[in-house]
Length: 509
Figure 1 (cartoon, rainbow, N blue to C red):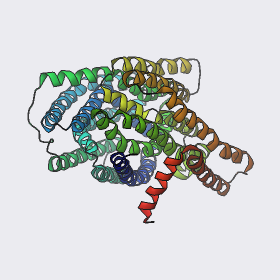
Figure 2 (figure 1 turned 135 degrees about the vertical axis):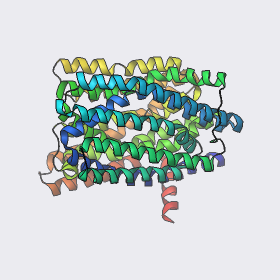
Figure 3 (figure 1 turned 60 degrees about the vertical axis):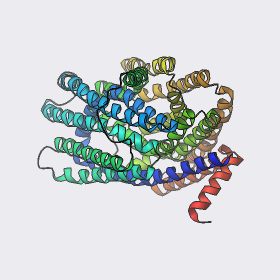
């Protein structure tokens, strides 16, 4: 590894550590916050908030495509080192987000109201509250849209300390909201939705102030560059297929669960999603540190480093997630009882399946970033997006045939593996990336690690007697065994040397 790439690797490690500080704070705060909110709202209202928020989030199929375009173009131009065009991209991004916010409001308001009044499984007395949740969720959604160019600038510059501190502020504000709704002056569900919209607004203002002070390109001026707008919309238009398929998989599945099983099961699914999000943040934070280097290195023409980084970051993403996911999968019921006390039915199986899905998806994350960096995404999105779009009809068919609500996640897991190989083939055609090397060095390695890591926890689950202390012992053994498998079986000699060096620098040894 040359000196420049070694420096890049150390920067990834440093930024990852900052993001993990953010993650641990947010995970502790988030898990406690969701428990307080669930107890304050009750299972039914918590499920209503989850479903209505999902209806609004469905419109992220429109915004998500453009958000990815904004992030890719800002990071790509920063990698090319053209400050004038970088400012033009930033200003164009702000204009696009403003226009998009207006479109989302005009579409989501009537569609959301129609769904609440005609399709949603809900007590008629709670329809007015659900309507207010829709209004405030839309406000928060639009405000979040306006944060995208600032967040893209922070991650492109790899200023993860700022990203971490603002994220912690967000988590603490949400914790404050959780305590405030206990003494709500009016309907708790409406009050909660209103306060959450206020949190989003405060965070948006903070992002704007930081970026204006630290980044020269974040000086807004009205710009209308027709070729640039056309280029960004063309990229976003094809990316729309992939984003839509992901939204329909996640939030469409939630709506299907509501239609077939009701809001109480939605509450169980919502709790599982919350826990899965906390665990998945291990990978999200790592990839937040890695993604800018993949895009900027590709823009600079350093494909050799990009290919090496894809393989290493895919393995590390899987290991980081598995380190937490595998022990939780075998001890989900214990952890949910400690966390929630009263665990909604279906929650345990939802948690286990969502974690398995996240483990599968973690292998694809660097490939997605690399493919977007190429800009050649038309055929990629048609193929991969088309496969992901099968989630909704297949789930509907199984539910119609009488399957349990968890089948929505089982379908997602199966299609996730198919999508991984589709991504590999498409990226190989676009860049010359070696599919056999990835399959041998990443996919087969991940399967070997997963089976080895799960073997001992599985045996222990049959041997140990029931009881909370035995369960805690099982959790501890599972965690240490999984960590050992990752280090000695999953990591190669170079990976182990890097980890030991990094830990030594952080501990001063």
